[in-house]
Image 1 (spheres, rainbow, N blue to C red):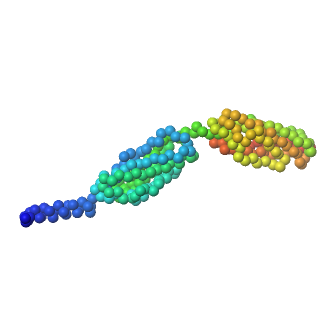
Image 2 (image 1 turned 180 degrees about the vertical axis):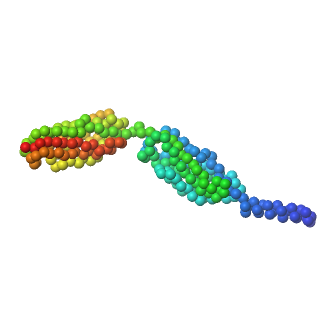
Image 3 (image 1 turned 90 degrees about the vertical axis):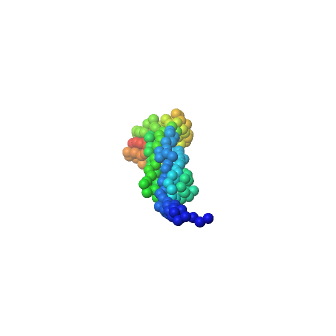
Length: 232
């Protein structure tokens, strides 16, 4: 059966249109959500999130680049090319250490979607600090007043942990004339521990030194005790 001239012409036109569609079609990226809220989390957690998308265009979608703001990283995509109608996921990790309160972080996705070359995504949420150790001293100045060479003296101060988890004493720095003895190096939440400071005078005259106690407290990590004396 022979095709008429008009049918052949229509076939050629249809083939041309189909070819043109393949050659000149556009990729279109459409995200399920452009903002993801992770809710309330403990500061310091690593939050795993994902942004789902689909190529709703009629040409291959290319993911050319993904850039993130501080604290965010993206893991490798399964692939970078997505056919029309194909779906994909951009996985994101947010390292929350050092952040508190309401936070907003951005991710920028560059594609070959000519109408939307740069897609801006946002991560939002609230970071709380409920697990922390906090250090304080009952006295940060100790005066031995007048002391004599060849004798040993001592005074006490108290470290208080007003936090919600154990407080750890990590490092102690002091002069050779000073010898601190800790009741305990790990202080439970809401508890305190004595520090007895022994002093062995070595040279006569006015004397001042500092005892430095480094802890893992959330805020004030370094405790400093000043010690004064007049040595005869």
